[in-house]
Amino acid sequence: MRQLRKVIARILCVSALLTTGLVATDTAARAAVPNRWGFAYVDVPNGIPNLAHQAGSWPAAFNVSVATPPGGVTLVRFPQIATNGGVAHVTAVSDGPHWCQTLWWGPSGPDQFVAVRCYRYGGAPVTIPFTVVFEESSGVLPAPQAFGYVHYSGAAIATQFNSAGGPPNVVAPGPPGIWTVTLPGLGSPGRSGGVQVTARDPAQPARCKVGGWASIPGAQVVQVRCHNALNVPLNTGWSLTYQRERAITGAAIPPKNFAYTFDHSPASAGPYSPLPPAVNHNSQGSLNTVQTAGAGLRLVIFPRVGVLPDHVQVTAFGAGPEYCNLLTLWGTGGLTATVRDVVCYNAVTRVNQRSLTSYTSAF
Image (cartoon, rainbow, N blue to C red; front, side, top):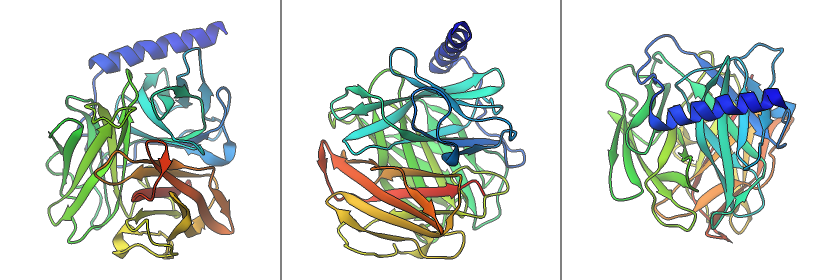
C-alpha cells in the first residue's frame, strides 16, 4: 500500500507538470518509426486487465496494470514505454449513456501512465470498462500510407506527428468548442483513411468527436467538436489521430491484421460496405460491413483480421452533440472481429449516428 501511495504521488506530480506545461514535449520528432505503443481493455478497477485484449511494445514479461484510488480516476500503467510525447484515446464499453475521457498522460520511472475518468450523461462519474490506446510515432511513411496525430492542450498543440515529414500540423480555433485541424502532406484525391478523437480534460467532464472531414490533395482537414456533460459546446483539450493503411497504434512494422471503417449511412439497414473503399480499409483485402442492430446500434464486422490480442476504438461523427461508445466487448474468432455493437446517443436517447471505428490486432 505504501508503494502504491508513492506511485500515485509521483503520477499526480507528473499530472501537475503536464497540466501547467512544465514537461518538455516532442512536437516534431523525425527519427525512424516506431517509438512506443500499447493498448488495453480495462475491465477491472485494480490489478491486471483482460490479457486477451492488451499488448504493447514492451518486453514479453510485462503486463498492463490499473489502479483506481479514491476519487474514481483510473490510472492505466503501460510498462517500459515512458515518454513525454505521444497521444492517447479511450472509448467507453457500456450499455448506458456514458463516455470516457483522458485526464492526462505521462511517464513515471520506466512506465507510461494514462489517467482515465468516465461519466454518465449529466456529469456524474461512473466506473465502467473502457478501451485505451497510447502511442508515440516519428519518421516518414511512403504514400499512400499516412499517419498523423495532434494532442491539443486546449490552448495550443502540445505534441504532434505527421508521417509526411514536411510542414507541421495546424490547429485553428473557431467558435466555442470547434477547431479545424490541418494535416499537411497527408492528402488524398478523395476521402481516405480513418479518424479518432478523444477529449482530454483534467478538470471537468468533456467529450469530443469528428465534426467534419475533408480529404484534399494537399492535406487532411478535420473539424473537432467538443461538448460538456450537458451538450453545451466546450473549449477543452483533445487528441486526434489520422490513419491511412496503418494501424491505430502507428507502429513501424504494422500488424498484418487491422481495419477501420466510416459508417456514414447509419439509417441503412445493411449490411453494407461503406464507400469509397478507402474509408473501409481491411489489411487482408476483405470487405468490412456495417448493419443495424436496433435503434442507435450498429453491428460492425471486420473479416479475416480478427486475431488476439486486439483492440477497438470508436468516435462519433457529425455537427451535433451526439456521442458513441461500445455496447459490450467485441468478439474475436475464426479470424473475424465482430463489434456488437457501436451504440450512439444524443443526451440519454439512442440515435442513429455516423461513426468511425478502428480495429487492430497486435499481430
